Amino acid sequence: MKKNRGKFLLLLGALLVIADQVIKILVKTNMSIGEHINVLGNWFQLLFIENEGMAFGMAFGGVAGKYVLTLFRIALFVALTWWISKLLKRDKPVPTGVLVGLTLIAAGALGNIIDCLFYGIAFGHYAPLGQGRVVDMFYFPLWTWPDWVPWLGGHIFFEPIFNFADSCVSVGAIYLILFQWKFFATEENKDKDKKKGRK
Image (cartoon, rainbow, N blue to C red):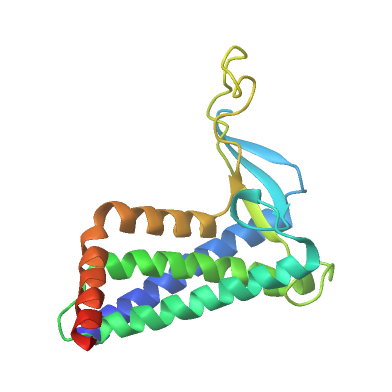
């Protein structure tokens, strides 16, 4: 049972990373930076940009910051992989939803790690190892706020441009918070009880 769950999670993670990379390579090799394609009217577009920093186009501190961010993503991926492995070995089965949510986050982290590590070398040799740019393409300009709305007037409701890996991280995190919070609350209570027992 444990081996089957482990194989399922490994297969799921691999498929998510492959899907992320296929989408990115197709966009990168068939579109020019700034080019956009309307998929469903104006509210869902493929808009090719290259992200120098964090998820959803946020910037992060130049060359040094980029290395720090890449190392953070690697550390997050390693920690999540170790945690999933530890949960799989438990005598009492952990809810499958918890494992799937963590796998989504780990796969998303790995997808963007690949961009940062190798894209600068693989595509045009524009940057050294660890300095590659993350490919983003999904854009949902759902609506523009009316000019009379304070602070928001004239701005697009959802401006970030993101990729499949970002979606995996976001969906995994939101799913765990909304539907698996009881598991983590129980884990926290167990840790508190252990600490009390040591005193």
